[in-house]
Length: 561
Image 1 (cartoon, rainbow, N blue to C red):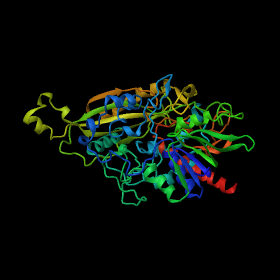
Image 2 (cartoon, helix red, strand yellow):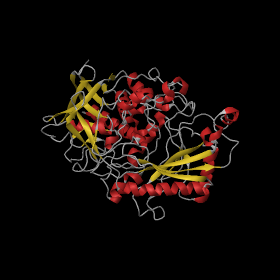
Image 3 (tube, rainbow, N blue to C red):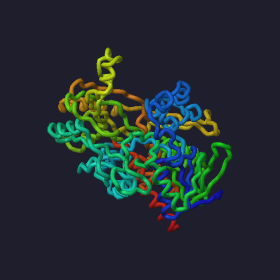
Image 4 (cartoon, rainbow, N blue to C red):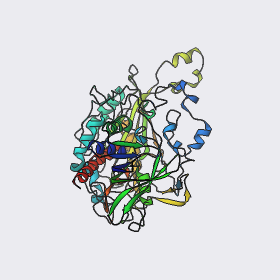
C-alpha cells in the first residue's frame, strides 16, 4: 500500500464520508481511514429484512450481550437485537466517567451515519450570533450567509423531505416532498394556529428520499421505519449508500478499515502536518501515511482525542491547542422532558405504513423580541414527537385471554400524542474530556475520561419545556395529560459536540472560519468537535455543510500550492 497521498480523511461517518466525496471529486488522491470493520452497502445489513419473530429473543438481547454493552444500552433502544452490532463493546472499548456521560459509538465503515436519527435542520443567525450576544462561549467566525449555499448543496444531494415555513429561526431548505401528518397531528397543528401566533407544527425534516427523483442508486423511502438496521434501498442518507460510493467512483479513494489513527504528525520546520500515525486493529502493526491535507472527522470526542495525543515540542498540550480549549466545551442536547395526552376522536381513522419521522415544533422562546423572551433561561428548544394508536395494553387487563381478547387484539387502541423537548446546551469550559494515560486500551492508547454535566440554564429550561408541552396539548383538546422529566446524562442525545471549537481568536478557540486549525492550517476538523454552540436543532446537517465548505477550501488551497 502506498504511503503518500494528496489528502487523508480520518473517519467514515457523516463528516468523513462527505470529506472523502468532495476531495476525491475534486481530483485529490485521498486515503480514507476507519478504525472499525468494513461494511458494504446492502449486503452487510444483517437484520434489515427480519420481522420480530425472526429475531432471537424477539428483538431483545441476552443478559450476556447487555453486560458487554452496559453503557451503550443506556439509551434503551440502540442495542436491541436489530442494531446491537452497530454499537461498540464497552469492555473492549472502555471509557471513564468523573461524571456520567453516555458516549454511544459505532466502529465500522459508515459510523453512526447508519444509525443516526436523520432529522435535518439548519442553524440560523439566531444560533450563529447567540454566543456574541449573551456572552457564553466565543463568537462563531461565520454567519448564516456563509454556510447557506452549502446547506443548499448538501440537501440537494442527500435528499431531505420537509416543508418550507418561512421562519427566521429555522431557515427553509431544498426539500423533497414532505411526509404526511396523521389526522391527530393535523388536529393539533390546527389548534396551535388558533391558540398561538408564535408557534406551529410541521412534519419532521428528515434525510429520506420521498419522490421519484434519481439519487445515484438510492430509491424512495418504503416507510418500513427499520432505518437503524441499515437501509438496503438507500432511502435515507448514509455514507455507505451515498458519499463513499461517490468517492469510490472517482478512482481517487483508497479506503482502509481497521486502522486506528492516534496521532497527526507535525513538522516544526515546515510548520505543517505531514501525515498520521496508524495502528492496524488486527495485527497491531504501526504505520505512517503522509499527505498535504488532513481532515479529522473521527467524531467529536475521537477527533479531540487524536489532537490531544498529537504532542510535539511546538504543541506540548496537543496539536493546535495553544488556547487550552481542546477537549473542553462539551455540549449535547438535553431531552426527555415534555408531555403526552390522549385524544378522544378519529376512531375511524388510522395511518398507512411506518413513517420514519415524527412532528417538529420549531423554537419559539428567546427569539430576540420581548414577547418570546424568557428571563428564567437563555436560548431555546424545539419539540419532536407524534401521534399514534396504542396497543392492547390500553384495554381491560381481564380481557387478556379467550375469545374476547382475540377480538380486541384486532382493534387499534386510543389515539395518544407525545411532545418531547430538545433543548440547547450552553458552551461551558468546565464540561470537558481528558486523556488517561494510566488506563490504556488494547492498543496501548489512552482512554477518555468525561467530566461534564447539565448546568443551571439547561435545568431551568426543562421546566418550561414540560409546562408548554402540557399547555399545548390541553389547548388542543387532549385529556389524561401526563408530563415527564426523564433527565439523563449528557451524551444521551448522541449529539455530543464542541471539543475543538471554531472561533475568531486563536487564544480562545482551535479552528478558524474554514475549520482549519489556527496554527496548523493544513489540518481541518469538520465533525461535531468544531461546533461553537449547539443550537437546539439536530446538528448533522450542519456537520455536512461545514465539511463540504471546508473541503472546497482545502482543494483550492491544494491546487494553488
